[in-house]
Amino acid sequence: MSEFLEQAAGWLWGAPLLFLLLGGGLFFLLYSRCAPFLYLRHGIHVLFGHYDDERAPGEISHFRALCSALSGTVGMGNVAGVAIAVTTGGPGALFWMWVCALVGMATKFFTCSLAVMYRGKDDTGQVQGGPMYFIVEGLGAKWKPLAIMFCVCGMFGCLPLLQSNQLTEIVREMFLEPNGWFVGSEDAINLGNGFFGLLLAILVGAVVLGGIKRIGQVAAWLVPGMVLLYGGCALVILFNHLSVVPEALGLVFRDAFTGDAVQGGALGAVIMIGVQRAAFSNEAGMGTEAMAHGAAKTREPFREGVVAMLGPMIDTLIVCTITGLVILVTKVSLPDENAGVMLTAKAFDVGIPVVGRYLLLICVLCLSFSSMIGFSYYVTKCGCFLFGARARFPLILFYLLAIVASAVVSMDDAINFLDVTFGLMAIPTMVASLLLAPKVMAAAKDYFGRLP
Image (cartoon, helix red, strand yellow):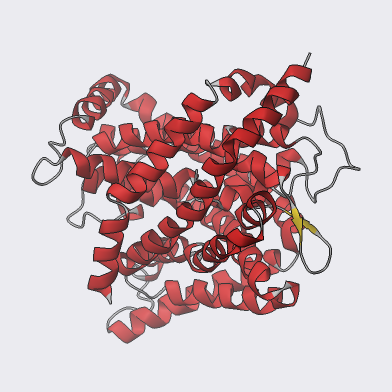
């Protein structure tokens, strides 16, 4: 099974998804003539409540919708994912993450505007948004198999395998093993991991049982705080290594077009790894972000579209960049190229001696927790589309059990499983968005024309 997952992930994230995500995002960028980028300032005004309407359909404000989306994207992908990208794809992978973020901003404008344009209702009458709804409402009932495909893949692709696994790893190496707890045999290690996974599941369950409103409330104070804390720590490290920052940036640009850091010098491997990690980081084109933004209280789809564009800018262009630069300027390395979060922990240890890794632990706890509560909404929303609103509680139990299970599985298997299921979500999302793009632009011209 491990070998099959590895081969399937390698094929899927080769030409098929490179073409779909980069090619589709580039199409959106050119087709819109970069028009949405001209309204980023308008998006900031919308974000901070200048256009809020409590009577509008939806469940949460624009600000909480973005925070809910960022709670899923600003997470272990920014810490462990970037570390894996830099070690397996070389520094040049970071450049292709930037490219993916820029085209991803255009992709998010289209997918998240569609999530509000074509909202549907669940079997309780509650207004819902997301790819599964804009596929059915926008393209018609004959396209429902595409919506079902998205939901099936989303139920498994949004499981918190990486978050739970990597958080358990850093807690084990920093606290359990030094204190002699749950060490020795493999059974003892798995018992310790499982115990910590159970604790995580209880904490996450206390939040997610309250639905998107409680998730939005928690994310609204957790996301800004964790971004500022993590970014502040990383900027301290970069300031202390200011003299080598230009060298690190030069290495990123040089390696992006040579592939020297990858075994065999394969440029395609650098691009593939960069796009792959960026997709997990900002989720542009995956469809998950559209589910969160589809819950925004608004009658104007394009207000949420321009707000959604801020996501990749915060997530990839800012947070992922500083993670990659911290690793490069501290020049740390580990024998295991899939070490992930432990490589970033070593970089923080070198950059801020004595307390660096403990500050990272606080950041990782917040990042992982926010991702886990955000992803729970996606899993339950996909499942409720398939099985009805009554399935919400069993789906939450399934999600919480996955947190415990992922604490003890191999990280390689977890990454390959997520690569396959998460990648498959992009197919229905991007296909439907490309087909509906003319309707988006026609309505967007009307909206932007009405702005003062």
